[in-house]
Image 1 (cartoon, rainbow, N blue to C red):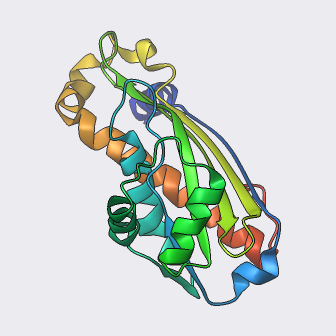
Image 2 (cartoon, rainbow, N blue to C red):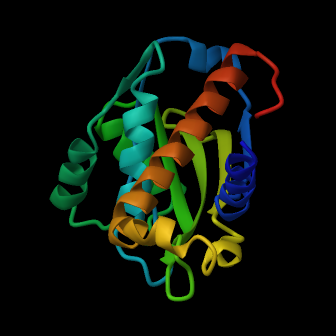
Length: 207
């Protein structure tokens, strides 16, 4: 039992996760009604191409579970962009709103990824950090009706167990990509749960 307790303490130390998130919904009643909404590709984090698609996909997969929300396939948005010879990079909110209208959506979610990385050079357990910001925009008025901010960092103290428990976590070295993808899914799940709570008016310590 004592050995298990000591091991549990070490596991807690090296698997420490820090989460900082903020969700603000201005027009809760409007988002309680049946709506069509699309998540556009987020701007990539510096030096991490594809991170914007990863975050947008994860959010879409979770948002589809909100009742009354009809998620529009991002491929429809991309088709419109292609037809108009436009690229997501540098588009203004006004242009994004127009694109949302063409896709017959009521709202669009746009955002950017500021951090998206893993580091295992000095760690047995990979360090990961995911951070992004987003806005929910009404395509009819162009107004921002909600904002999202999320910052997740895992294994901040991974160095503590490198020597003592390295033998236990060595297999994780082969699962780094899966690890960050798992964290992306958790981040999206956290945000969507916070959105649901805010829309419903429920209060909790996790929003």
